[in-house]
Length: 148
Image (cartoon, rainbow, N blue to C red; front, side, top):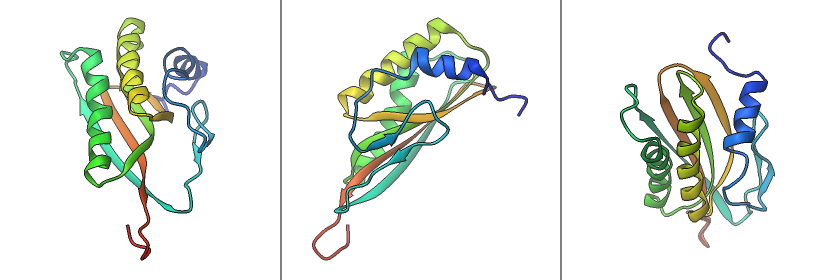
């Protein structure tokens, strides 16, 4: 656990950069700020999950682009399956806490999430080479024969 930033700093980081600004969804029973999310899936829907990872070890890519790209790639994978995106989680590994970088990154990601009606429901932060992983979840209607 030496590389994990699971101290008050992690929760302050969540509060400062990620706790607001995305869509609000009634299906979220327990969301961001806890170690897990509790979500309600309507009985006529199936849950679909997609993941995308973006790495930028040299930090050459603008944080706005990196934030949007990771979320967009994950959402696109859901949409490719015909699913409607609903929630996302973010695993963010970074070498250090850079408030300017985080502001630009989180604002871009939250803007895309809000425009996509996606609620950021949680994630994890760790220290290391810059890596962004987004897991997106969405709905796929169950057809009349019970198959999506």
